[in-house]
Structure formats: structure tokens, C-alpha cells
Image (cartoon, rainbow over all chains, first blue to last red; front, side):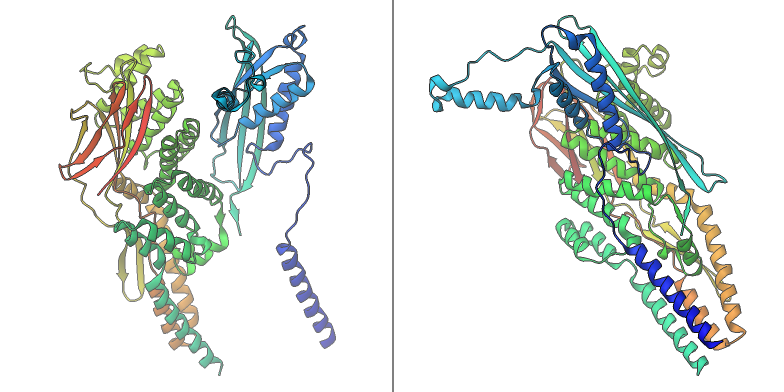
Amino acid sequence: MMPSLTWAKNLAIALAVSVSLTACMATTRNVDTAEEVHYNANYDFSDKKKIVDDLTNSLLQSDIAYRAEKPILVVYGVANETSEHINTGGITDDIRLALIRAGKYRFINKYQRDSIAAEVAHQTAGHVPVSERIRQGQQLGADYILTGTLRSIEKKQSRQWRLFEKKLVYYSLNLEMTDLTSGEIAWADKVELAREASKPIFRW
Amino acid sequence: MMQSSKRRWAVLLLGVSLWLSGCASQPLAKVRDDVNHGHYAQALERLDASEFTDRDRLLVYLHKGLILHELGRYEDSNQQLLQAAELIEALDQIDISEQLSTLAVNEWLATYRGEYSERLWVHSYLMMNFLLLGDAEAAAVEARRALRVFDAHPKPLKNAFFTRALTGLSFEHVGLLNDAVLEYRVLADALPNPAPVAARLHRYARELGLSDVAEKYKPEDSSDGQVVPPGQGELVVFVARGRIPKKVSGNVFVPPDIRLSWPEYAYTYPLRGTYTLRVSGAAPGYSTIRSDMALLARTSLAARATSVATKQVARAVAKHAIVDEVSEKDPLVAGILQLALFVLEEADTRGWDVLPQQLDLLRVPLPVGEHNVQLSLGGQHVVDLPMVKIVPGSRVFHKVRLP
């Protein structure tokens, strides 16, 4: 009787120790950026990647991309109309990068205009020999502006008589290219994402 | 031998109860004292130096966020308040083990989750900070998050006029006039007198082609000077006054051994005194939207009075049952235990108690140019704003703290 009791006690201790150790163990792993990962219903890098991929493909397949002379674009940004603090500059940066790599469009660096002006002013202030100064008045003029809006709608399920609370989040990103000469919207497309997540209302 | 050990434990429990009832959340009480005396830097140091449990984590974020806002460190304030907002969302789940422990002892063992009004004010301060930092888009994000809190607790937050006006302003500032009109309509219907918002609502409704809304809110006096004329700009001032009352413990003793204890806000008189605004020596027309924070805090607390009362009755029954169980075995231990549980029945008086008592939103249309702006209260407290520079269509934000 006694030996079996000791054996059971040891087993219980070992089990308790292993459970507590497992709970305390911190883990780290590299995640493939192509892998779709979501921890909750909110916007994350997988969503950004899908938005960028879909809109880049759409832009590359548009008629504008096949013109003899590469269209020149200036990015005016994507307005964030969601209820999350999302840096939409990351979306437009990645779209611009993909389009530059594809070689179908040319871009004006709107966000460095002040730096360009400062550098030009420095060169023309007498610090740089005339022969090495850049020629002024040679900057590219944009054919189109690229703008967009990121929106979200969020709905939570009522808590009454439930053990789990569901949350549904819908995101849409509308991107459009406006012809600076005519004011016409020359291209537009959108990406939609909807995700449902649930979490227990109670926890121990 | 066994009985003596039990008695020692019971005496120890009584000692701990007396100690706990006297010193709960002492560092936060001292922070309030520091802030009341205007020692903001000292309050921050105290918050950084003190040890807090996870149960008070939200209060630490809230206190730090507000103190940093008062100091004009808006980015640092946002860091704290964004963490507070995230934590409030995470605390949405009901922790059963924690609830059971509060049933046996008191509510101080629960993680502080914030009153409904406090959950809203996190977003009010974030909106103000983002507007003061010039980040209109982020302020609009916070406006949407504030709307979620309004939707979740419509009754206790009905009179949160300042935040509702700030939400409308945040939408208006990024050009979302439809959303702004929706908020101004809710505000106009909630205000005792819609005059401070009617002219603005009338103008935007007309611009959007909402003729019935425009007609409904047509101001009686068209020259009230509250709407920015084309080509001019606007100064927006957030004015904070006073200090929100502290939560105190209300008590009822039911002989022989039951004590019921609940939190309530100490009574404070509404603040008196009127503002005088001078722009380069002249008195301009302007609108004011005011929130009585003390009143809102009381309304929010009252909204969960039923659940507080239910929990108290359940706790009284649970404590009675525990003492009954022990008294059958050892009446002396039961007596000491009864005294300890009686002492431990202490109302949870934690709160975001460094908030002001009143918040005002002043909107002043101004012509293009540079202006010396002076705000005074009852002719006593005079505040000179930094030079206000208005360009066509601009909106300039400032905050003022008054006693």
C-alpha cells in the first residue's frame, strides 16, 4: 500500500512541476511574411500584405501601366478612417516599391520636397562650384495623383446568455488614381477584408 | 495544539485586515495630494518609484497620462493613455477566480477596470493630445473609439457634452462633415439649450443638403459670431478647472455583525465664476460647451449601483456562512474571523482622481493675423496664451488649466 502511494505522490509532483514549467516557458519563432497570421480580428501585417499585393496587381494590369511613356505618379497618401491607429504610409510605401520594381511607373518623392529644396538652396548659396550644381527647373511633373481611404466597420455580439463574445471586423481600402490634366479618376480599385473572432467572456 | 495554531492564524488575519484597511493604495492617494498642490513632477516621480500590483495598473496609466497632459508632454501622455485604452479592452473578460476572491474579502482584490465615464475620458484626453500635436487623423480615430464607449453606455454618458463636442470637432477637422453633423445633432438634442452648436450644425447641414436639419437648427440670431466666416480661422481652447471629487466609502451597519460598504463620490459644489476672453483687447464672440465631470462620474457610478449592491449582499451572505462554519468548531476563532471580515468589508474607492471637475471647449472665430489672447476667470486668474497666428481656414488649439 505504502509504495504505491509514494509512487502516486511523486507522479503528482512531477506532473505539477512539468505543467508549471510548460506554462512559464517563453518561445520565439521566425514567421514567414508570406504566412497568414492573425492573433485577433484587428488589422495586422497579413492584412497589409494582402492589400498591397491585390492593389499592386490591379495597378500593374491597368491600361495606364502599358502606355509607351511611363506614367509619373505622386502619392498623396491613404486616409485612415478606421477606429485603429494604423500607419497607412506603410501601405503606400509598399505599393510604390512594388510598382517601381515592376518598372511600369515613375514616382515623384513628394515627402522629400523640403529636403530637396534645402539641398538645392545649399548648392546655390555658393558652397558648391557652379559646374557641380544641379540644374534647376528640371523636376518631373506628375501625370496622376494616387490617393485612398481605409475604412472599417466593427460589430460586437451581445453578451447576454453567452460564454463567448464574437467580434466581426470589416476593412476596405479604396485606392484611386486621378488624372491631373483632366481631374478624371483614371483608375480605381478596392480590397475588402472581413474577419470574425471570438473570445471567452469568462477566464480563470 | 491544532486549535492554538488556528487561533494564531486568526489573530494574524485580523492584524493584516486592519493594516490593509488603513493603507490601501497609499501611493495613489499621495499622487493626488501632489497634483492638488501643483507638484506634477513629484507626482510622476512617485508613480515611477512606487510598486503597484497589476490590479492598479490601469490607474497608473491614467494618472500618468493626465499628469503628462497637464505638463504639456502630449506624446508621452498618449503613450500612457493608449496603453490604458488597450488594457480596458483586455479587461473586458470576467475573471472568475478574482470574482470569487472579492466575494470572500472585498472589491479591492479586483483589477480596476475604470468607471464608464473614465473609459470615455481616456479617449477625450487622447483626442485633445492629438489635436494639440497637430495629428488630426489620429484625433478622428480616437473620436471613433469614443463613439464605441458612448454606444456601450448611452444613459450614464448622455451629458458628456464636452467629449461629444470634441468628437464632432475631430471629425470636422479632418473634413468628415457628415460624421460631424451626426455628432452635433446628438449634442444639440442632449444640451438643455442647443444654441452653442446650432449655428455650426445649421451651416454644415445646409452644405450637405440636409435641408430639414438645417431648418430645425436655424439660429435665431444669425450674427452670433460662432461660425467661422470664409477666409478666417478659429482658435479652440480646452479649459480644465477644479479637481474631481474623491470616491469615499458609504457604510451601513446591520447588527450584530454585518457591514455594507459602497463607494460614492464626496459632494462638491458646482464651480462658480465666468470666463472673460480678450483678443488683442477686444471681446470676441465665442461658443462654450461644458462637461461637469463630477456629475458624470456620479451618474456613471450610479449606473452600476445595482451590481454593486447585489455583490455586497452576496458577500455578506458568504462571510456569514464562513463564520457560521468555523463557530461550530471554535467560537473564539470564529469571533476573531468575524471581526477580520467585518474590518475587511471596505468599499473600493479607487478612481482616476486627478481629473478636473469641469472641462470646457471654447471655439473662437478669429480674423487672419496674429492675436494676443487672454483668458481670465472672475477677473482673478489671468492666463496669456502664446501668440495665436491665424491663416485662412486654419484652426489653432491650446489648453488652459485654471484652479
